Amino acid sequence: MDQNTLSVQIKSLMIFEFLKEYNQLEHLIREKFEQNLPNLPSDILQQLYFYNGGRVATYIDAEEGAVKLNTVKYKRDDLFKEIKVNQLIKILKKNPCMQVFNCGVVSIQRTTTVYSFYDCVIRLLNMRNKLAHEMENLQFKDQDLIELLSLEQIEKETFEILQNFDVKKMDNMTQYIASNTIYMRKLLDLLNVQ
Image 1 (cartoon, rainbow, N blue to C red):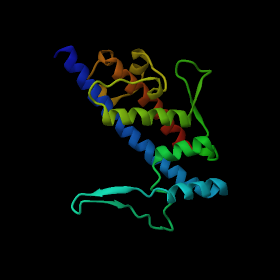
Image 2: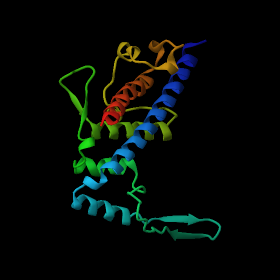
Image 3: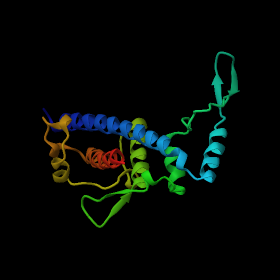
Image 4: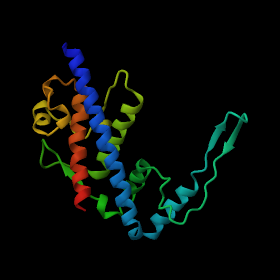
């Protein structure tokens, strides 16, 4: 098998692993948010209600040849489910009032460096968006990466999905994905403990 084919296979498996774990992270963030909602200060709750009410948008009804306005209905137990996780993270980063998210992960390469939970999730979200929309010519930047780990550091981690592959055959972009996946696992562990 040629090097390019092997590299594409490893990348495909790492993308799958990243997206699978990102999905778990989003669900866990939503769960922790809903559990801690009663503890939010009233001004933040009011802000969330304001944002929630302002979600009115338009959509195209091609059958009627019209642009229509979405309706937002009151749901008593909504718990802000219509506000997307990325929006929640940005709101809570600006107003760090949920203790469960006011944490960080220690750098694997520099133990004196701690990456904040919010910054990590925003970078993971950036990567997820690129994986979803820019598969051709995939290029990650600093704002998409928590910390680039060496192939040796990546090799020390358990990736069952890669057990029959040589991790050293990864291309640079796959190395970015694997690095973020390792940090995402750390975030999942942090949230599961709380």
